[in-house]
Amino acid sequence: MFVLTRRRKIATLVVVDSLLLIAANIAAAKFMKPFVAIPMDLILISIGLSIGFYLFYGSLFKVFTRINRYTNLREIIAIFGSLSANAASSILILLFINRRYSLRLVIFAYLVSLLLIIGSRLIWRIYVETKNMRYVSADSAKNTLIVGAGEGGRILYNSFLGSKTAQDIHVVGFVDDDPNKRNTYLSGKKVLGALKDIPELIEKYDIQMVTIAIPSLSRKKLRRIFELVESAHV
Image (cartoon, rainbow, N blue to C red; front, side):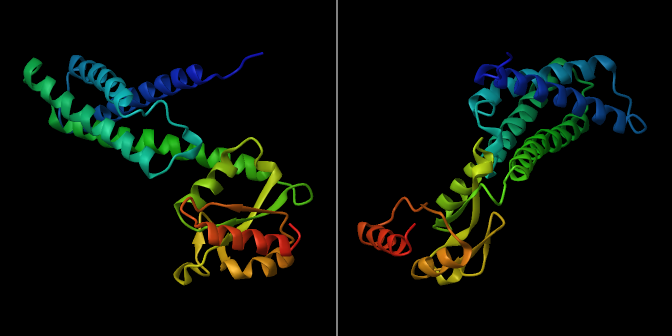
């Protein structure tokens, strides 16, 4: 049985990104062909430099060891940094080895590679989340309420979507004591109320599980949440 281990995932990611870099350079050359003649040897050099520098900076920015189904702003910034450093290094090298180099080729290839590589990560995340949500059964999934509509709540919700047990959990929404967050949405789920509303929300939405996503929560508030949940027999 074929198992996609972490090493195989990294190898797959390296191959896919390399192919996307090749596609970006070819697309840039094709686009510029009517305006400027670009020698084939220059295109090949540009492709080689792009892949070499991207593998180096990608390893430096840990692009290949991140979990892609959780792709967020940090992952996008890491890819942006790797590709930007890649483009800058390629330009410097081409300045020395080939006076006929086209700055426009490198910049255009850089922009296309940004679109392709970041786009591939986002498409994969959408695919995983859509696939997991498709298997959520209203009969078997536990209606879940997340306490905390901040960064912790967002990470927790996204981890539910990207996990293999996504079909067992149905997040109904969030609760948070910040009045400015009331009736707003986080990752597509509504902030339904404050902590005091937990018993009412449990009854209204048939909540079976309450999960806390506030790392800095005080003991007093934690005890209060436990009391509210216990009073609703969850």
